Amino acid sequence: MKNDKLFFFPPPMVALLLIGAARILDQMLSWISLIPASSGGIVWIAAGLALSLSAAVQFHQIKTTVLPMGSPTQLVTLGAYLWTRNPMYLGILTALLGIAVIMGTLPYWLVPPAFFLIINRIHIPYEEAQLEASFGPRYVRYRKAVRRWL
Image (cartoon, rainbow, N blue to C red; front, side):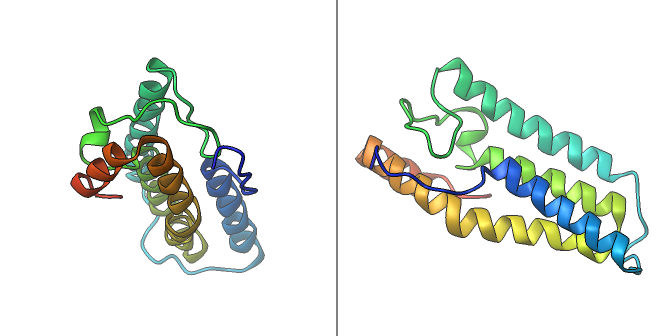
């Protein structure tokens, strides 16, 4: 599996592309706010970015790759990884919810579920197969003990 090449946009790029698409749709059409726009989304954005960043720092500290298509050298199971197998993706999803709260219109509210579906159906299965190939029974035990999202 080490030589497999997966051609896709990394998850942060997926999020940015979806936000860009929402912005274009939002500007092209007059949308009715689903909920009143609120600056309270800033808290969601900050929490999401903090979660993603803390998980990325853990990877850096133990010198393993954060790149989904990279070859992992260590299995991370501490910190946020004790309660979710994907804190970086959960953090991005949380930040996207914050953006939806701030903007309040339908195109932005479609971004979090679209991100979730893309990551859950394309990225995570590939990564899980790679982790199982790299770490075997140790990863299988971890996968059974900790939920994919929450």
